[in-house]
Image (cartoon, rainbow, N blue to C red; front, side):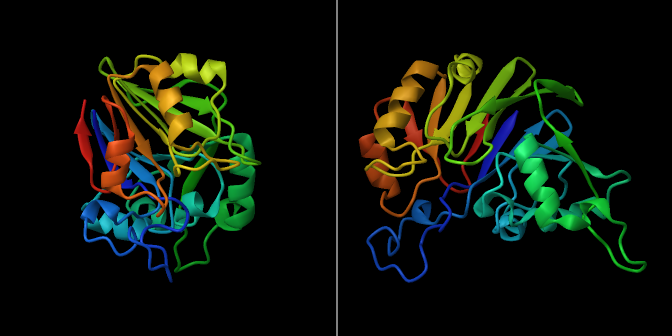
Length: 256
């Protein structure tokens, strides 16, 4: 299994427009953060977690030629407003692309992208999507996919656990807390990546202290934080995290 972090930033991205802070002016390439998205390759399957507004640029930067399916976490703008960029991939697929989401996220996607239930005008194209509600673990082409409920403000939020070939990866890019059942599902995975927005507390995101506590309880072989805002530079995040934990960065690729 190969995991590629296409974007690791929060809703503004980094640098944030109009900001002159040290992180936004940083020359460290790891401080350039697209909005969060993750690609997972396992067997002959190419999966995408979330479709941020930067998706077209991310796919071009990483030479992504194929996306077989997408897993959505929630319906906030920074995670869904690149949804129509899937059209370039669905145009080349024999069948509509399967996309899984929670019930609330699926409902919002149908409202925002109302063409999902309409045929295209002759001579035009629409993203051909088979939108499905994820209610529990399921199999897709040799992968086991498990939605991971999480608390994130008013969002109907789920992370995802992906298992293949005896390896497991869990990603929860936005969360304030994780229920016991999600913690149980994540324990001992090979790789986990969870939300750590900033140092000071936030009402709907984990800060560094909260993320560190959750990662310690999960006890993954490798633990990462993602969804960092411009208040935390990459080098600073490295210093804040204990041994065995690290900040992800755009372009990070991990083979499990």
